[in-house]
Length: 346
Ligand SMILES: Nc1ncnc2c1ncn2[C@@H]1O[C@H](COP(=O)(O)OP(=O)(O)OP(=O)(O)O)[C@@H](O)[C@H]1O
Ligand SMILES: [Mg+2]
Image (cartoon, rainbow, N blue to C red; front, side, top):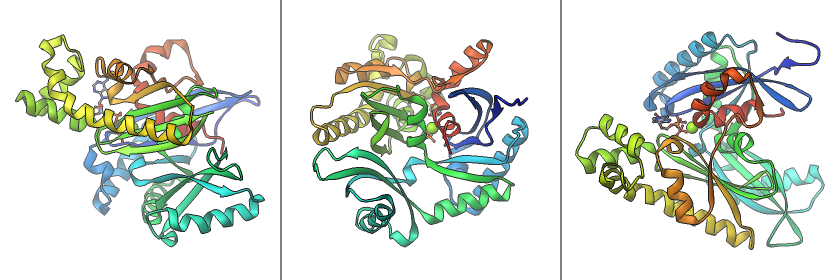
């Protein structure tokens, strides 16, 4: 259905995650986004993460199946790039007119990014005044290997899609999950294989990190230390979690070493942020992804850092029929990226 005042956006968001491929389409009118469509299909980590031709073909078929199932009205798509493939840094740059700025940033990027400039797709956004050098302004700079982007593009074009934007997952989910205020907030997305951290200040991502510890490692430590198979380990983790009372705290004991690999890295990032932005306190931590449904994991973080912890709501900026409340809430922790991609103003 479309009308003069409100019509479906002419693109949808596509998150190719480790455990599922998800899509979201919104319609916008008067500054409000309404849900038009969402869908997802499970994938295996091997298919999603592999660069081999056979796995890419398989992924293409899965996405095609998802498109058919969702019956999306447009072929235009904004696509997420796994944060683990993206290099991100903050840099201070001269205050220059925009035409000169782009050139200066490209020149400067050469020494900042880990891959050769000629083989990398770089992008940047202006953050504001540099907190350390009053004569400069700061930017968030990202770079992705050309090859990864080109392969993704070929795969998606091969099934008839028209890619209008690529965006790192961590930046996309900042749009959907962060509270729209001037505070500093830390977003923690614990995925299957890795965890994304983003510090958002005044609604703009200022620091991102990807830590190679996720649900898989937490489940593995549960099954190894409790001497049960992976399936049982996973059940224990999502049933008893970080509770010191449930099952006499055995699951807590079994996973706490691995969880603390994560909390140590989170702490480092908080400190790193506060060294650059002196005096800026992180006011809340927003948890999403698999770990947001591990009992007492959010509470564990709150106690560890003395910072309020909230469970992210991927649909916070989206209006929808109230009858869908339960179904959407249940999926909220895995839709942050897809919703954020759909919320882009292209
Ligand atoms: N409600 C839940 N109950 C049990 N397990 C869950 C629940 N929600 C998520 N998980 C598990 O948490 C893990 C991570 O989920 P998530 O949706 O964050 O992964 P992903 O987005 O596919 O991964 P990535 O972001 O790393 O690409 C998955 O193994 C998933 O099965
Ligand atoms: Mg994810």
